Length: 470
Picture 1 (cartoon, one colour):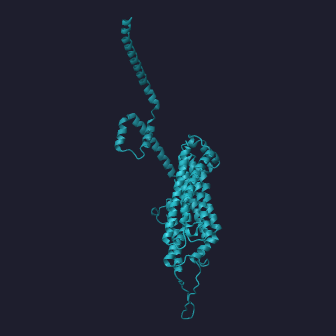
Picture 2 (picture 1 turned 90 degrees about the vertical axis):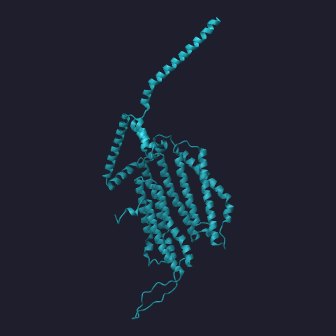
Picture 3 (picture 1 turned 30 degrees about the vertical axis):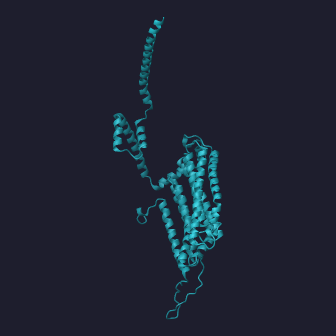
């Protein structure tokens, strides 16, 4: 019995080894038989593989890389890929030729028809952008999106206010007092500006930390956060710059020599215009991120782009009398001798209308960064009078004159000719103040001209590419 058992064990081991080898061979044979069919089902077409290669190498292929890829491809794959590529290129050239034959008026007519057709379906398109972003992503609840954005902005604002409370004593010590030199005043204002930058940085850090704690899983969440935080940074930075120029509460800290009432009104209107412009651009950008159709995005952007421009036009006409009197007083201009000064509201409204037409054209043609360009253009319009008032003080200090305007009280002597008739009176120079006023008139003209040129360059107009009127 022991002998049979000792003899039988090796045979069983050998049989088990042979059985395992046979099973492994059969399994490998089955795998080899199924791999070709599986590969035939999973390998993408040659055209798709070429497109994948093009996307994988956005900067292009070197000759060595191209030779290596062609070496591992068979002739049939190369021919199929080349055929697919030539068909795509032929279709693209036909489309380009058809679009080149289209006139400018026909192009705008087609674009207007497309945008007008999108208005009846705009509410449903906005709802679909939340229900299924890009047609494939998970749905987004508008309420949860607003609550999440409010939480992110609230945490950032809370962190900023906390830092402001911590440095409140330091800010009080930086207040400008009587008897301080100009260097001390500038150093205090520079330290205040550094504290403002620290507050903005803390706001961004708090918003990012809140986003990380929320951990949103939607693919569009990082892009939406970037848009919102960028808009908030722009608003905070411009608001701090407005306070730096015309502090609404501390007259001694104002770089622009204006009274308390105009300073508060100027600061309030700058913030209002900026909120309208940045808010409109952020809303349009977020719907674009959520995958709304370009025609629907343009249909949404056009009415929103009217709001900040219309608000600025209303401000121009509401305060035109006070602004005209202030400019005339500072530059010593008589409205009867300078009638063009009374027409500045019409010119400003026409300029803003042209600016809106440029913005609308960029929206219709779907140009990139149209919202950012529109915001910068509006800020340039607001910055022209601020820069003029800011420049007037150092010029007056250089000439030893006064910033505040007023009419001259000197009576120039009148000369007569040989027949006793009075000759035209020459303008008398009453001192440095008159020289400052004459120079400031030129400064206003230069600033207005430069603002138009800079705005044109922002929107892509290059004077070197044009000759004459054409």
